[in-house]
Length: 343
Image 1 (cartoon, rainbow, N blue to C red):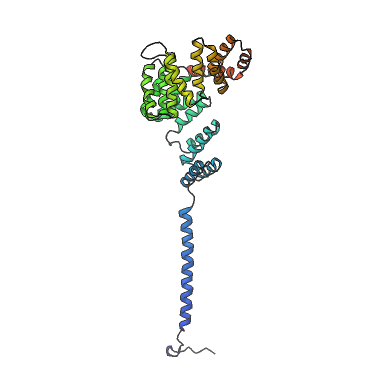
Image 2: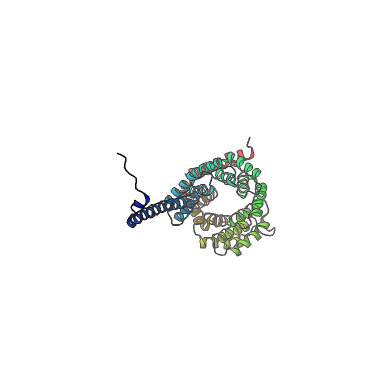
Protein backbone atom coordinates (compact mmCIF):
# COMPACT_ATOMS: atom_id res chain seq x y z
CA UNK A 1 0.00 0.00 0.00
CA UNK A 2 1.47 3.37 -1.03
CA UNK A 3 2.52 5.60 1.78
CA UNK A 4 0.49 8.79 1.95
CA UNK A 5 2.52 11.96 1.40
CA UNK A 6 1.93 14.62 4.01
CA UNK A 7 0.76 18.00 2.96
CA UNK A 8 3.18 20.88 3.55
CA UNK A 9 1.13 22.02 6.47
CA UNK A 10 1.43 18.54 8.02
CA UNK A 11 5.32 18.19 7.65
CA UNK A 12 7.43 18.42 10.83
CA UNK A 13 9.76 21.48 10.88
CA UNK A 14 13.59 20.74 11.00
CA UNK A 15 14.98 21.03 14.50
CA UNK A 16 17.55 23.79 15.33
CA UNK A 17 19.95 21.11 16.57
CA UNK A 18 20.17 19.48 13.12
CA UNK A 19 20.98 22.85 11.52
CA UNK A 20 23.73 23.41 14.07
CA UNK A 21 25.37 20.01 13.44
CA UNK A 22 25.35 20.53 9.69
CA UNK A 23 26.97 23.98 10.03
CA UNK A 24 29.64 22.55 12.34
CA UNK A 25 30.50 19.79 9.88
CA UNK A 26 30.71 22.27 7.01
CA UNK A 27 32.96 24.54 9.09
CA UNK A 28 35.22 21.62 10.04
CA UNK A 29 35.48 20.52 6.42
CA UNK A 30 36.37 24.06 5.38
CA UNK A 31 39.05 24.23 8.10
CA UNK A 32 40.60 20.92 7.00
CA UNK A 33 40.68 22.09 3.37
CA UNK A 34 42.29 25.38 4.44
CA UNK A 35 44.92 23.55 6.48
CA UNK A 36 45.75 21.19 3.63
CA UNK A 37 45.97 24.06 1.19
CA UNK A 38 48.20 25.96 3.59
CA UNK A 39 50.53 22.99 3.99
CA UNK A 40 50.73 22.60 0.22
CA UNK A 41 51.47 26.28 -0.32
CA UNK A 42 54.07 26.24 2.49
CA UNK A 43 55.79 23.24 0.96
CA UNK A 44 55.73 24.84 -2.47
CA UNK A 45 57.14 28.12 -1.24
CA UNK A 46 59.75 26.48 0.99
CA UNK A 47 60.80 23.60 -1.21
CA UNK A 48 64.57 23.55 -1.83
CA UNK A 49 65.75 25.32 -4.96
CA UNK A 50 69.19 25.32 -6.57
CA UNK A 51 69.78 28.89 -5.43
CA UNK A 52 68.75 28.14 -1.83
CA UNK A 53 70.98 25.07 -1.69
CA UNK A 54 73.88 27.08 -3.14
CA UNK A 55 73.44 29.76 -0.46
CA UNK A 56 73.18 27.05 2.19
CA UNK A 57 76.48 25.63 0.92
CA UNK A 58 78.12 29.05 1.17
CA UNK A 59 77.01 29.39 4.80
CA UNK A 60 78.33 25.90 5.61
CA UNK A 61 81.63 26.67 3.88
CA UNK A 62 82.04 29.90 5.87
CA UNK A 63 81.42 27.88 9.02
CA UNK A 64 84.28 25.55 8.10
CA UNK A 65 82.01 22.65 7.08
CA UNK A 66 83.47 21.94 3.67
CA UNK A 67 82.07 18.41 3.27
CA UNK A 68 78.52 19.51 4.12
CA UNK A 69 78.87 22.49 1.76
CA UNK A 70 79.95 20.15 -1.03
CA UNK A 71 76.82 18.01 -0.50
CA UNK A 72 74.56 21.07 -0.68
CA UNK A 73 76.21 22.26 -3.91
CA UNK A 74 75.92 18.79 -5.44
CA UNK A 75 72.20 18.80 -4.62
CA UNK A 76 71.88 22.24 -6.24
CA UNK A 77 73.54 20.96 -9.40
CA UNK A 78 71.17 17.98 -9.45
CA UNK A 79 68.14 20.26 -9.15
CA UNK A 80 69.26 22.66 -11.88
CA UNK A 81 72.09 21.36 -14.10
CA UNK A 82 72.39 24.76 -15.85
CA UNK A 83 72.77 26.86 -12.71
CA UNK A 84 76.46 27.88 -12.65
CA UNK A 85 77.27 29.11 -9.08
CA UNK A 86 77.37 25.68 -7.37
CA UNK A 87 79.62 24.28 -10.12
CA UNK A 88 82.00 27.20 -9.66
CA UNK A 89 81.99 26.72 -5.89
CA UNK A 90 82.76 22.99 -6.21
CA UNK A 91 85.56 23.71 -8.69
CA UNK A 92 87.08 26.36 -6.42
CA UNK A 93 86.89 23.99 -3.45
CA UNK A 94 88.68 21.27 -5.45
CA UNK A 95 91.33 23.70 -6.69
CA UNK A 96 92.10 24.86 -3.16
CA UNK A 97 92.50 21.23 -2.14
CA UNK A 98 94.98 20.74 -4.98
CA UNK A 99 92.67 18.43 -6.92
CA UNK A 100 92.93 20.05 -10.36
CA UNK A 101 91.38 17.01 -12.02
CA UNK A 102 88.15 17.35 -10.02
CA UNK A 103 88.04 21.10 -10.64
CA UNK A 104 88.47 20.57 -14.38
CA UNK A 105 85.81 17.85 -14.57
CA UNK A 106 83.32 20.06 -12.72
CA UNK A 107 83.75 22.99 -15.10
CA UNK A 108 83.70 20.69 -18.14
CA UNK A 109 80.28 19.40 -17.02
CA UNK A 110 79.06 22.98 -16.51
CA UNK A 111 80.24 23.95 -20.00
CA UNK A 112 78.43 20.96 -21.53
CA UNK A 113 75.20 21.72 -19.66
CA UNK A 114 75.35 25.48 -20.15
CA UNK A 115 77.75 26.41 -22.99
CA UNK A 116 76.58 30.04 -22.90
CA UNK A 117 77.71 30.62 -19.30
CA UNK A 118 80.39 33.34 -19.55
CA UNK A 119 84.04 32.94 -18.48
CA UNK A 120 83.90 29.16 -17.96
CA UNK A 121 86.30 28.46 -20.83
CA UNK A 122 88.75 31.04 -19.50
CA UNK A 123 88.76 29.39 -16.09
CA UNK A 124 89.16 25.98 -17.70
CA UNK A 125 92.14 27.24 -19.69
CA UNK A 126 93.82 28.35 -16.46
CA UNK A 127 93.17 25.01 -14.79
CA UNK A 128 94.46 23.06 -17.81
CA UNK A 129 97.67 25.10 -17.65
CA UNK A 130 98.06 24.49 -13.92
CA UNK A 131 97.55 20.77 -14.57
CA UNK A 132 100.32 20.83 -17.22
CA UNK A 133 97.83 20.10 -20.02
CA UNK A 134 99.43 22.73 -22.22
CA UNK A 135 97.94 21.76 -25.59
CA UNK A 136 94.39 21.81 -24.23
CA UNK A 137 95.07 25.00 -22.25
CA UNK A 138 96.37 26.85 -25.30
CA UNK A 139 93.44 25.77 -27.50
CA UNK A 140 90.87 26.57 -24.81
CA UNK A 141 92.34 30.01 -24.03
CA UNK A 142 92.23 31.04 -27.70
CA UNK A 143 88.71 29.64 -28.07
CA UNK A 144 87.60 31.63 -25.00
CA UNK A 145 89.12 34.89 -26.28
CA UNK A 146 87.47 34.38 -29.65
CA UNK A 147 84.10 33.93 -27.91
CA UNK A 148 84.67 36.88 -25.55
CA UNK A 149 87.60 39.26 -26.18
CA UNK A 150 87.13 40.66 -22.65
CA UNK A 151 87.49 37.33 -20.83
CA UNK A 152 90.06 38.18 -18.14
CA UNK A 153 90.72 34.54 -17.19
CA UNK A 154 91.36 33.58 -20.82
CA UNK A 155 93.87 36.40 -21.39
CA UNK A 156 95.53 35.55 -18.09
CA UNK A 157 95.79 31.87 -19.06
CA UNK A 158 97.26 32.74 -22.46
CA UNK A 159 99.75 35.11 -20.80
CA UNK A 160 100.76 32.35 -18.39
CA UNK A 161 101.29 29.89 -21.25
CA UNK A 162 103.33 32.38 -23.26
CA UNK A 163 105.51 33.06 -20.23
CA UNK A 164 106.03 29.33 -19.75
CA UNK A 165 107.22 29.24 -23.35
CA UNK A 166 109.60 32.12 -22.43
CA UNK A 167 107.85 34.42 -24.89
CA UNK A 168 107.92 37.27 -22.40
CA UNK A 169 107.11 40.01 -24.91
CA UNK A 170 103.77 38.54 -25.91
CA UNK A 171 103.08 37.37 -22.37
CA UNK A 172 103.45 40.97 -21.17
CA UNK A 173 101.04 42.11 -23.90
CA UNK A 174 98.40 39.60 -22.76
CA UNK A 175 98.82 40.49 -19.10
CA UNK A 176 98.65 44.16 -20.06
CA UNK A 177 95.21 43.46 -21.50
CA UNK A 178 94.30 41.69 -18.27
CA UNK A 179 95.46 44.70 -16.24
CA UNK A 180 93.42 47.06 -18.44
CA UNK A 181 90.31 44.88 -18.07
CA UNK A 182 90.71 44.36 -14.32
CA UNK A 183 92.90 47.14 -12.88
CA UNK A 184 91.75 46.48 -9.31
CA UNK A 185 92.98 42.88 -9.25
CA UNK A 186 96.22 43.20 -7.27
CA UNK A 187 97.36 39.61 -7.84
CA UNK A 188 97.13 40.03 -11.62
CA UNK A 189 98.78 43.46 -11.39
CA UNK A 190 101.75 41.97 -9.53
CA UNK A 191 102.09 39.30 -12.18
CA UNK A 192 101.95 41.95 -14.90
CA UNK A 193 104.77 43.93 -13.24
CA UNK A 194 106.94 40.81 -12.99
CA UNK A 195 106.46 39.82 -16.64
CA UNK A 196 107.06 43.41 -17.77
CA UNK A 197 110.53 43.13 -16.25
CA UNK A 198 111.15 39.79 -17.95
CA UNK A 199 110.14 41.44 -21.24
CA UNK A 200 112.79 44.12 -20.76
CA UNK A 201 110.61 46.89 -19.27
CA UNK A 202 111.67 46.86 -15.63
CA UNK A 203 111.32 50.64 -15.26
CA UNK A 204 107.62 50.38 -16.15
CA UNK A 205 107.15 47.85 -13.34
CA UNK A 206 108.46 50.00 -10.47
CA UNK A 207 105.56 52.53 -10.36
CA UNK A 208 103.03 49.69 -10.50
CA UNK A 209 104.64 48.05 -7.47
CA UNK A 210 104.95 51.33 -5.57
CA UNK A 211 101.22 51.93 -5.96
CA UNK A 212 100.40 48.49 -4.56
CA UNK A 213 102.75 49.00 -1.59
CA UNK A 214 100.93 52.24 -0.72
CA UNK A 215 97.41 50.84 -1.24
CA UNK A 216 97.99 47.51 0.52
CA UNK A 217 100.30 48.40 3.41
CA UNK A 218 101.23 45.38 5.59
CA UNK A 219 99.22 42.88 3.59
CA UNK A 220 100.24 39.85 1.53
CA UNK A 221 100.06 42.03 -1.57
CA UNK A 222 102.48 44.54 -0.04
CA UNK A 223 104.85 41.68 0.88
CA UNK A 224 104.77 40.40 -2.69
CA UNK A 225 105.34 43.92 -3.99
CA UNK A 226 108.34 44.25 -1.65
CA UNK A 227 109.74 40.99 -2.99
CA UNK A 228 109.29 42.02 -6.61
CA UNK A 229 110.85 45.43 -5.94
CA UNK A 230 113.88 43.76 -4.36
CA UNK A 231 114.06 41.25 -7.19
CA UNK A 232 113.90 44.02 -9.81
CA UNK A 233 116.66 46.00 -8.09
CA UNK A 234 118.85 42.90 -7.74
CA UNK A 235 118.32 41.58 -11.26
CA UNK A 236 117.74 44.71 -13.39
CA UNK A 237 118.46 47.89 -11.47
CA UNK A 238 116.44 51.09 -11.72
CA UNK A 239 116.42 53.96 -14.25
CA UNK A 240 118.66 52.06 -16.63
CA UNK A 241 121.39 51.58 -14.02
CA UNK A 242 123.17 48.39 -13.03
CA UNK A 243 121.62 45.99 -10.51
CA UNK A 244 121.77 47.43 -7.00
CA UNK A 245 122.17 44.74 -4.34
CA UNK A 246 122.47 47.31 -1.56
CA UNK A 247 118.98 48.68 -2.26
CA UNK A 248 117.54 45.23 -2.97
CA UNK A 249 118.46 43.59 0.34
CA UNK A 250 116.28 45.79 2.65
CA UNK A 251 113.22 45.09 0.46
CA UNK A 252 113.84 41.35 0.56
CA UNK A 253 114.63 41.32 4.29
CA UNK A 254 111.31 43.11 4.85
CA UNK A 255 109.61 40.22 3.05
CA UNK A 256 111.15 37.70 5.45
CA UNK A 257 110.22 39.89 8.40
CA UNK A 258 106.55 39.28 7.63
CA UNK A 259 106.95 35.84 6.03
CA UNK A 260 110.13 34.00 7.14
CA UNK A 261 109.20 30.97 5.03
CA UNK A 262 108.87 32.91 1.79
CA UNK A 263 110.66 30.71 -0.74
CA UNK A 264 111.32 33.42 -3.34
CA UNK A 265 112.63 35.87 -0.72
CA UNK A 266 115.03 33.31 0.77
CA UNK A 267 116.20 32.32 -2.70
CA UNK A 268 116.91 35.87 -3.87
CA UNK A 269 118.80 36.88 -0.71
CA UNK A 270 120.89 33.70 -0.99
CA UNK A 271 121.66 34.47 -4.63
CA UNK A 272 122.66 38.06 -3.78
CA UNK A 273 125.10 36.91 -1.10
CA UNK A 274 126.50 34.26 -3.44
CA UNK A 275 127.13 36.89 -6.15
CA UNK A 276 128.93 39.00 -3.56
CA UNK A 277 131.15 36.06 -2.67
CA UNK A 278 129.63 35.72 0.81
CA UNK A 279 128.96 31.98 0.76
CA UNK A 280 128.62 31.66 4.55
CA UNK A 281 125.81 34.22 4.52
CA UNK A 282 124.22 32.71 1.43
CA UNK A 283 124.13 29.15 2.76
CA UNK A 284 121.27 29.36 5.35
CA UNK A 285 118.99 31.23 2.94
CA UNK A 286 119.58 28.79 0.08
CA UNK A 287 119.26 25.78 2.37
CA UNK A 288 115.95 27.08 3.71
CA UNK A 289 114.68 27.85 0.21
CA UNK A 290 115.58 24.34 -1.00
CA UNK A 291 113.88 22.72 2.00
CA UNK A 292 110.70 24.79 1.61
CA UNK A 293 110.60 24.34 -2.17
CA UNK A 294 111.98 20.90 -3.10
CA UNK A 295 111.43 21.65 -6.81
CA UNK A 296 113.08 25.09 -6.60
CA UNK A 297 115.71 24.46 -9.29
CA UNK A 298 117.42 27.84 -8.94
CA UNK A 299 117.89 27.55 -5.18
CA UNK A 300 119.07 23.93 -5.34
CA UNK A 301 121.67 24.62 -8.03
CA UNK A 302 122.95 27.65 -6.08
CA UNK A 303 123.04 25.56 -2.90
CA UNK A 304 125.21 22.94 -4.64
CA UNK A 305 127.65 25.61 -5.83
CA UNK A 306 127.91 27.21 -2.38
CA UNK A 307 128.15 23.85 -0.57
CA UNK A 308 130.97 22.71 -2.88
CA UNK A 309 132.99 25.85 -2.18
CA UNK A 310 132.41 25.46 1.56
CA UNK A 311 133.28 21.76 1.52
CA UNK A 312 129.81 20.70 2.68
CA UNK A 313 129.61 17.33 0.90
CA UNK A 314 126.51 16.36 2.90
CA UNK A 315 124.50 19.24 1.42
CA UNK A 316 125.79 18.49 -2.08
CA UNK A 317 124.69 14.85 -1.89
CA UNK A 318 121.28 15.79 -0.45
CA UNK A 319 120.67 18.42 -3.12
CA UNK A 320 121.83 16.27 -6.02
CA UNK A 321 119.67 13.34 -4.88
CA UNK A 322 116.56 15.48 -5.29
CA UNK A 323 114.97 13.83 -8.33
CA UNK A 324 112.25 16.49 -8.32
CA UNK A 325 114.74 18.83 -9.99
CA UNK A 326 115.24 16.44 -12.90
CA UNK A 327 111.47 16.09 -13.29
CA UNK A 328 111.01 19.85 -13.34
CA UNK A 329 113.73 20.35 -15.95
CA UNK A 330 112.28 17.59 -18.14
CA UNK A 331 108.78 19.03 -17.78
CA UNK A 332 109.96 22.52 -18.74
CA UNK A 333 111.77 21.17 -21.79
CA UNK A 334 108.70 19.26 -23.02
CA UNK A 335 106.40 22.17 -22.23
CA UNK A 336 108.49 24.75 -24.06
CA UNK A 337 108.92 22.46 -27.05
CA UNK A 338 105.14 22.17 -27.42
CA UNK A 339 104.28 25.81 -26.68
CA UNK A 340 106.77 27.10 -29.22
CA UNK A 341 106.00 24.45 -31.83
CA UNK A 342 102.48 23.13 -31.13
CA UNK A 343 102.25 21.22 -34.38
